[in-house]
Amino acid sequence: MDAVSQALLDAQNKAAALFADVVDQGMIQAGKLESELSDEIHELARERYGVRRHWHKRIARAGPNTLLGYYEESADRRIEADDVVFLDFGPVFESWEADFGRTYALGPDPHKHRLVSDIGVAFRRGKELYERTPGLTAGQLYDYVAGLATTSGWEFGAPTAGHLVGHFPHERYPADPKRFSIRSGNTQLLREPDESGNPRHWILEIHFVDRARQIGGFLEELLTVPT
Image (cartoon, rainbow, N blue to C red; front, side, top):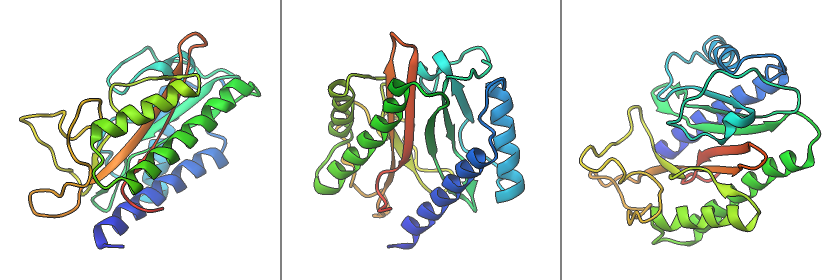
């Protein structure tokens, strides 16, 4: 594995360890505001992992708020005992970006637990498609994972399914901000190198929702690095 891939994987592993600590400490619990949970995770990341900055806003969403996409805002909600809760954090570890999202079903509802399982399956299948398809475009990957939502009885909850990640701050293209996002119709080749000839690295995001039941599940991590 090359040095950049290893650095990104190391950053992701630290983010995964942070999320495991959140679970082990019982921080996701009924009665807590989303904002309180986010602040507690932020403090834990600072104290235990030395995180001083996050490259995007910190997200903790519960119940109906899990239907919302990244750019949508909502009133701060208090977590309930049977909620679905998802976390989306972008901590920077030693100048390398992590982007990590996970969903937790707090109660026994099998439908909610199936949601958590299905987004994990969809991520793995999306990554398998990437690994076996050298000429895969961002648009083709989006259409594939969005189709997985439909076949599993869900709806894909966002117009994008991922983006670039890298050394903070990662590469951007102001003339066409949508170029480096995984979205339908985008012909950007995922394996196309950057202007310096270096491989680009991508995050894959899975967001399945059930609007009738007012729940959504979110999972994201590295697409382009073997784990």
